[in-house]
Length: 329
Ligand SMILES: O=c1[nH]cnc2c1ncn2[C@H]1C[C@H](O)[C@@H](CO)O1
Ligand SMILES: [Zn+2]
Image (tube, rainbow, N blue to C red; front, side):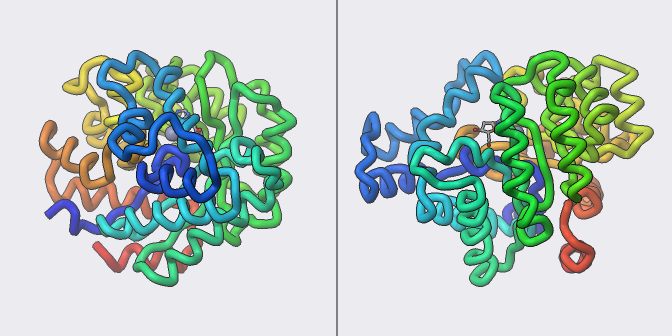
């Protein structure tokens, strides 16, 4: 039932959503040594363990998939397959994010990396009833120069596959200041802005992401529940929250799932959307996330429809795509 619902996904990392058997297959083709060539073993290594204690521990799971995302063919394939997987659960539109700086080990330039992912998306769009766009993630624990190169390299793809810029990786208090000038520049070029904030650190980071970086959307943002000033800022400015329940449980962004604030936010007219974050690392799809919310909270079809409509308004897609998405609900 839930699988058939039309869906939109705004927060999904490419490197966190690679099929285990694709990791093995590409590694064999490219002579890459893996710790194991058994699918179940690879799944275990990429999936977050049940006793995961933090975002930093969660982030260790990305090293393995990134080993096979260093060639044009590998990048194109994983992007294609992510759309294929999403289309199989009736996702109509997906914004895929990744950090180009993690994919240069085979000698590819940032532009070649971005182009390869767009090629994979374009290929899937021709076969399946789904559309996609790219969000470029800069890594907060790495240099501003890498972030700058990401912004400059993605510029020529703006509105030709690339729509937005993001900051991801470990979350320190006050990370925004370091990246203000580069994100300002990106905004000037026409990038839309979404920032991971209020996930492993406080609501103050959400305030900074909005006030200093001009974020229109916030990745996660769950911690605004503990900070009225951040909460009011999000609510009064119609800033969209890209919420990812399973990921938030796994990284301990939230201690007790019974207190997961998605429904409270929703009832208070905060613009929430529902997303996976990382399909393979978290071992879920978007259908699972919808079921998780509807099984644990009072959440009916009308509520789902409202979230779908929120997601349309919040996409960084063009008006034609938004109109196309409205026709499904
Ligand atoms: O939930 C997340 N918070 C912060 N960073 C994240 C999250 N999920 C994935 N990432 C990081 C790890 C990936 O290598 C990177 C680019 O997709 O983004
Ligand atoms: Zn994320």
